[in-house]
Amino acid sequence: MKYIKFKQVFIFPLIITLLGSCSELSDKESNRSSKSEYHIKGTISGDASAMPVYLEQVSFNQNIVIDTAIVSGEGNFEMRGSVSEKGVYMLKLSKDVSWVIILDNQEMNFEANKTDLFNYTISGGPAENEILLSMVGDLGKAQNNLAAIGLEFQQVQGAGGPVERLLELQNEYQEQIEFVSEYNRKFADTTESELLAVFAISLMDINENYDFISTYIEENGHLANENHLFRQLEHQIASASPLAVGREAPDFTLNTHKGKEISLSDTRGKIVYLDFWASWCGPCRHENPNLVRLYNEYKDKGFTIFGVSLDNNLKRWVDAINDDGLNWPYQGSQLKGWGCSVAREYQVSAIPATFLLDETGKIIARNLRGIQLENKLKKLFSEDEV
Image 1 (cartoon, rainbow, N blue to C red):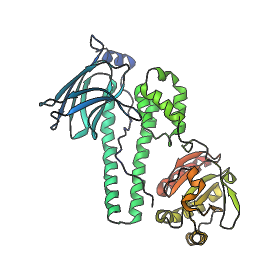
Image 2 (tube, one colour):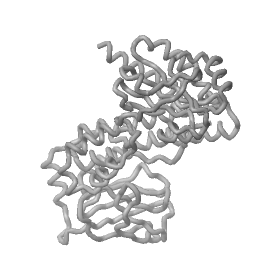
Image 3 (cartoon, one colour):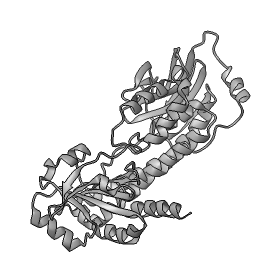
Image 4 (tube, rainbow, N blue to C red):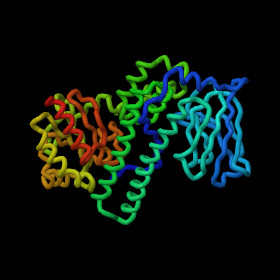
């Protein structure tokens, strides 16, 4: 069985635009020390005494440690130094306790509680911190929702609960991720702060937002000279998966259960749901009635399904097709189980795994099921009718 891997997610829904004009930013950011250095005066309550606190530059792969200090018995710490560019940094107390800040060579006061990652205060420093604090407040709501979903998922799965509920939780989890992703997109499109726009984009899944991110990079190349995250984003997009949303799905040819050759390219001109499944996959079989319903609803409007079975037994594969009423013409398999070369090419390590393709064969979504798939198809075909 495949279920979403629930993990600690720390993402920022950037949903508000930068307040104030450029002149207001300049006024606030003129509060630099005479030596052009940062000076952070911090207080951390909640029994952080004698703990080291690290100042790190936020990076894609591994944050870069800039400075460190020890929290005093009263919960205070100070840091002085200089940074080469204004950017996104993190004050980190431990693996699971950290706070994001915007830092430049200015004076800044920071206050937080060790047990609260979403409510802290910053005075002084770059004006964008005012916006960042609002983002983090909004993040707390999404983060708490994700944590609650993940906890229930573990409880249901551990108790051997119904597959139906696990699938519902997967959908709820994915909806939260998509909600935050949409926030990031809107913010990056509308904010006057290039720094926060790049930060928002850096939080997106490149494989799910390839077109959006690559377009932004192409249109804002001037930021490479002044923004650490932008330079890393350029590298990330250059090495993005060939299966990212926005890329063309690789073509392949398989045999149907009747021995006929079929190719993915045969479906050009249609919206295609590429479905990696197997007769022995419980969640796959549970989703099949929904696929049958959606296929029948949209097949005359230009929608089809291309099933790639990871079965290794012809009879079980055929029985599953007949039992579940899978009446679309594109059902193929190599009957090699996990040895299927198409599954390897599509980097499928667990099923169900799905890709939604547009009429030109470009990937427009990945791993949509249930209500998410239904809503996406409804949107796609309603747009065609306008």
